[in-house]
Image 1 (cartoon, rainbow, N blue to C red):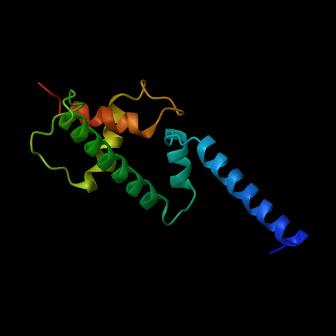
Image 2: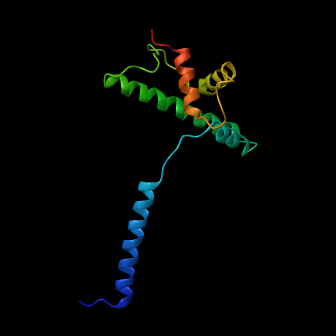
Image 3: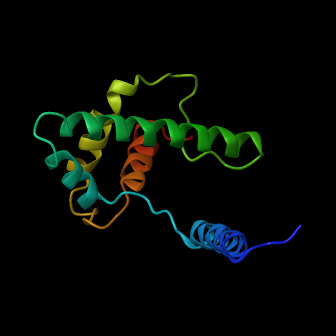
Length: 128
């Protein structure tokens, strides 16, 4: 079997593209959404912006709950203690807004949304 130049080129091109894709995935960092970005998300769509924010906050809430449970399962200290009190995901926005209002001077626009939600959970469900 002999390779012509187009087959050789296409194999090298595919290999190079795969290598580039892998390096991009490995070098890409994912960061949490900041308070400023959350505000921009809400303003991005007049009809659905508030729903985008609500869904994002629900995801943050559920992620923090799972992270807390995983930490406890591994023997670590809990970040907050719900003590078998289940939270309705519709409470996420209200908890977030209450925490921001209560500690308005604490939060800056570039701080992560997750920090606010974690502080809200910790103040509502402290570990004693």
